[in-house]
Image 1 (tube, rainbow over the protein chains, first blue to last red):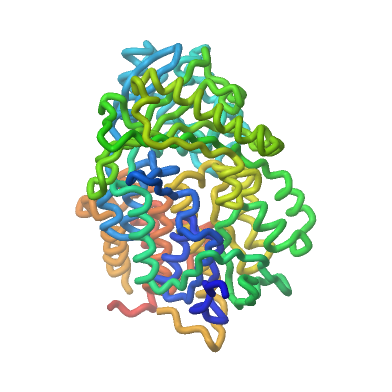
Image 2 (tube, one colour; image 1 turned 135 degrees about the horizontal axis):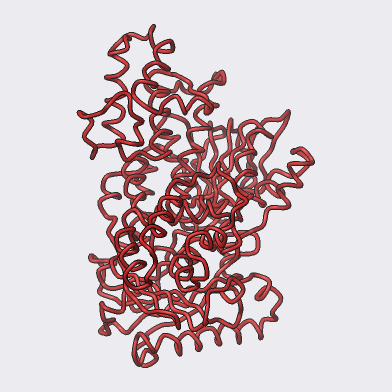
Length: 482
Length: 86
């Protein structure tokens, strides 16, 4: 008989959280700390969602999304998690760019970028300051008509090189493009520019282990390999979830699953207003990704000067279409040195990431698919040789993931690796107005994407859930919230 | 709680939210954002903390009332005047 992963789950909870990405984990932790009975359900066997890792023979541990996040993570981890987690956040100091327009290394903060833009790119200091100030003041309630391209054109007209410097890293971080609303760019860019790019020392595995220990301390019940089939609603309210052949009653649900999957599949469109369903259907998913994972032989080392993050491109200018094209010209390399896991075996790894369209991969036959993956691996090795000389001979293990891989592990519609485009934010916000007790805290609207966005959104939704549950008359079986 | 008590309580909450900030120099008439490194998440945490400590519900539309110490105390006074100081 298969193991019952819900053996310890009760029949009723105050809150069921579906999905254990950083948003789901944070919401679960905050609500349990507030005294609510919380059940966290994850379809995969590991917690963390896209904050994940995998191990391969030879002591190699690959991180999927560890590099990097803004300094704000430190504050959020300290407040919503533990001091120990916050204390492991360290800066990545070597951020490199290499493309036909320029090659440079930066600490990726406002001070260094101002210097680069004025000294190296010869932009007037007033334009640089004006741009930074405007980006910093942006808020998600602002006008969304202005596109990122228009924002750049206002301060740096005709400067494709400047646009590339400012845009490429953010596209890597959250999949946003020049055609997206400028506010989504401004908010994320300013978050990074405050202090630079940071990472978690010890690796994603250690972070998730520490978080798991913390949610246990907070009293969250956890079920892995628990694929929720249905969120049951009745009379305009959430009633229960169906999972593992059981129906678990709950006063509130926080879905950390894909936005469209939550509305259209888990709940079902008949429970929402027609207009809301139309808006939900119209939400554009963000693109997916391909990644190539490379582990060097145990005694091989990468030169530190190679950098922590390297935005490389052979394309003459920065264009959204070329970023997503199967004909890859842009790759972002994350270099993982032994210092990534000081307590682990010293290993050197490289993850090459490229944004990709799901449609380009979805329809391939098995043979074409395998051939395309192999081609991705070979072309990546060719391109990487410039930065890691003789890399082919030094590699111990190599493999690739595609939009199909992301779809398989996350159950995200179309393998979306950065959630939804901007309009998804409003739909996500509006879910509780449609069904009392139903909330969504996932990667939406670009700004709620990435580790920091996801974590903060989980915390915001936890506050809304607390507001509802604290105000509503508690069930007789509900323990008092103190 | 008197206005003075409420001010003390807000300072105590700020202390836990922004442990790195010097709160002794706060100018009550100036917006928090202009003198402390506070973002929208910090304001959300202030609201959460008030709810947790005193069961005060602050609707989202009223978050703007929390801009400065002076406006916060003025806004909270009618809501907190009957609360016993601990």
